[in-house]
Image (tube, rainbow, N blue to C red; front, side, top):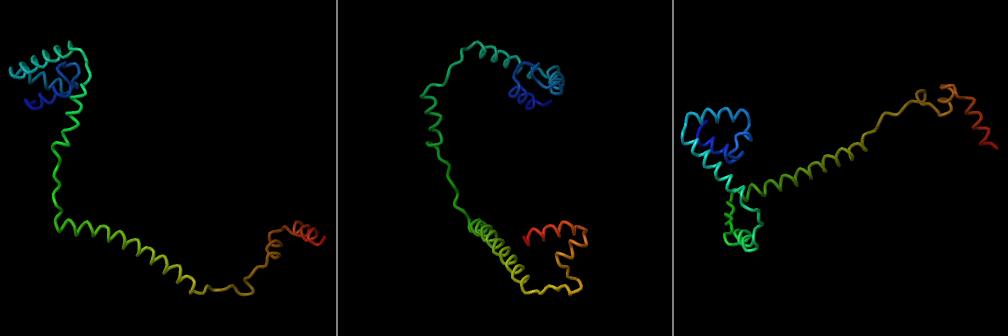
Length: 153
């Protein structure tokens, strides 16, 4: 484990090794036995955590909050002027989205319009089936006769 990785471990999980992930804890133990600087860093971090634990918890003062919220106003970001290529590419995306919509509408309109011009083959007299013939073919003639009798009355 490098010194940078060890410092990252301290920043993420604190100075208590029991809070460190097991795999990182083993690597940190090896690094601590090999490097005295890392042991000094761990001891200093433990002292700092103990001192911070003894301090009372207080909220931020209104002045501190105002100061922090004023930072973006005091130091605004500068926005770079767009280049010619950026302007052309940005417009191209909007143009292609519009053209895709127009093309889709045109294709749908063409298909629907052309579909009305095509004549479908009609059935011959021998292929056509009248509703009464269909009922008789299905075997429901008593029901059809009863319905006809009701309609006559």
